[in-house]
Length: 195
Ligand SMILES: [Zn+2]
Figure 1 (cartoon, rainbow, N blue to C red):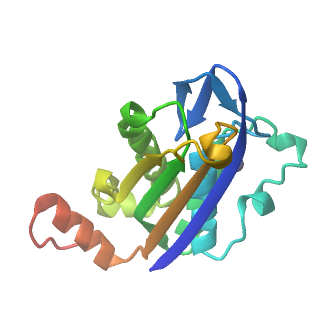
Figure 2: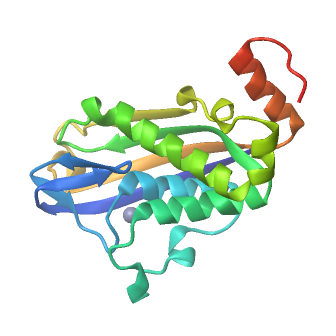
């Protein structure tokens, strides 16, 4: 089992939408960034890189490299998940806390969770095709493995004044072995299952 923490902060500027967890949300402010500014994806990627001892996203995608301008942050997370799978580690759970004054994101949390879950599923399918033969990856990645919380700062500080946005992400990764496959199948079928 490995645990990692990712923290990201961005400045907010006037705009029409912001991308959070792969979802474009209508807003009067946008996230100022070199990439698409998806602060949730950035903190997820950093938490995974932290958990596997692989530095941070700046090491893998330097903002001095023009190739990374307007980069889809999904690419960054997929890269971190791939590195984790190469170390035989897959998602155990992910807990995300977003600090922002507005917009309200409660109605988008479910769709964000599905986007994030699908990303982990796709990375697993791409990087672990031999495991697909053994099991359906849908049973390895359940909706309750991902949690998204949002909080304001009660008008205090740069978040409360609407000047910026911060995201904290804590991840735990588990060894991809026959035990985790058995556990996933147990959760799915509700009884002992031979892998
Ligand atoms: Zn960022």
